[in-house]
Image 1 (tube, rainbow, N blue to C red):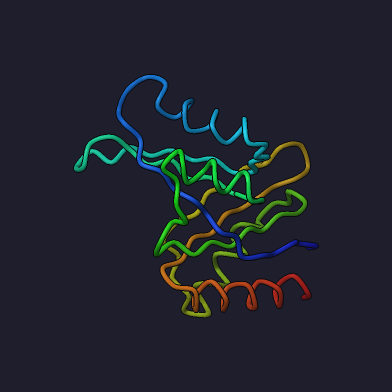
Image 2: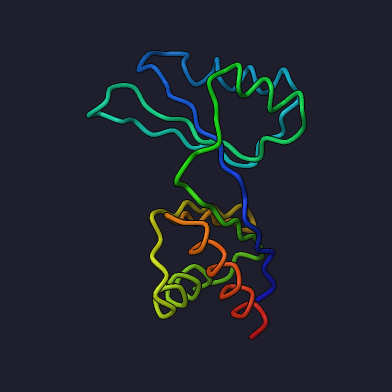
Length: 142
């Protein structure tokens, strides 16, 4: 199981609950040249509106555009990106190994296209994300 594993910085922006809110934020990033690999939007019913998560936000111009569009590094959200071949049970092996190591995830998003898959694992602390990277690299080597 050959996996590429890295910690990633996820950015977030508040969204108004109206048509076009996400498009406006993403347009600002696209105009600055952002090549996003991950986009997730969630409603926040208790607060109204929602939140838009993106990564990566790379380069001076893209970071400036992101900040101007209301994005900031998602505080308290520490993410690990894992990508590799889509094989039966890979997600189960990864999450099982994290559980055995006592590392609690706060969220997971994953997708497979063709024979490739990508997982974004979210943790509450930088320490947990770092432990997860080390544990997953060990799993990858086995």
